[in-house]
Amino acid sequence: MNKDIATPIRTRSILEKYGFSFKKSLGQNFLIDTNILHRIVDHAELHDDSGVIEIGPGIGALTEQLAKRAEKVVAFEIDNRLLPILADTLSPYSNVRVIHQDVLKADVLEVIKQEFKTKQDLMVVANLPYYVTTPIIMKLLEDKLPIRGIVCMLQKEVADRISASPGTKEYGSLSIAIQYYCKAETVMTVPRTVFVPQPNVDSAVIRLLKRDRPIIEVVNELFFFEIIRASFAQRRKTILNNLTNNLEKGKMKKVEIEEALQEVEIDPRRRGETLSIEEFGRLSDRLYPLFA
Ligand code: SAM
Image (cartoon, rainbow, N blue to C red):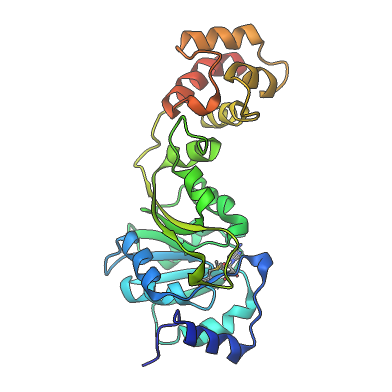
């Protein structure tokens, strides 16, 4: 029986066998600590009949641990040099399917329909490529996939922004965009020493559990996100100035915005970072008729 892929010795021997060189541009930092991998998988709370979608299997370190705990694992990998390696390292696991594709261009919903059972418990679990963390998470949420949630490793600084509360300096449009769909929590911080090569930022694992429905109901979702974008455009400015300057030009006058803010009981001198999601929702619903 082979040792786990994620031991330093086995990883080194796999990389040498295939003469693999890391591509920094693809965010290739592989995990070499089985203990960390077990803890990541624990946070996904998988059952024997769960399905898992992995993004970026690398040489299969996390995939292997997922395959031991889930019914099936489907992994998207962009780098074709890794395909023969994965075919080799994951050969003991008949419940893994590797798809050679950029996950950002993939029709993940279609893949779910083809690869998993209807209503199967599904989680996304990944050690994400750090250059595209946010686009990948946003795509998975905006595509409204039938998943229970996402457990993923990412830069600690991004994890802090995702799980931030109003009034903190980390709180911003990313916190709101994700907390709108999910309950977000940082479950582990991870030292650089458990990766090869070591990344030059600290890492953390977050768990996002999808809400049955978004945390608030708004009249128009696109407009709600437009209000949030505008409110954080210049962090040092007040909500009134940001909305006046950064919403589509000419549609709303400063006095109208000021009146709306007062009506929904938000002091126009406050900054975006102090507003809760509910306050943004109230504001967006009040302004929408003026904009539409
Ligand atoms: N899961 C492995 C581990 O934990 O050791 C590797 C993780 S490494 C941080 C990120 C992986 O994502 C690499 O294998 C990289 O080639 C792959 N990747 C990068 N961009 C991708 C994309 N857009 N779609 C799919 N895979 C991608």
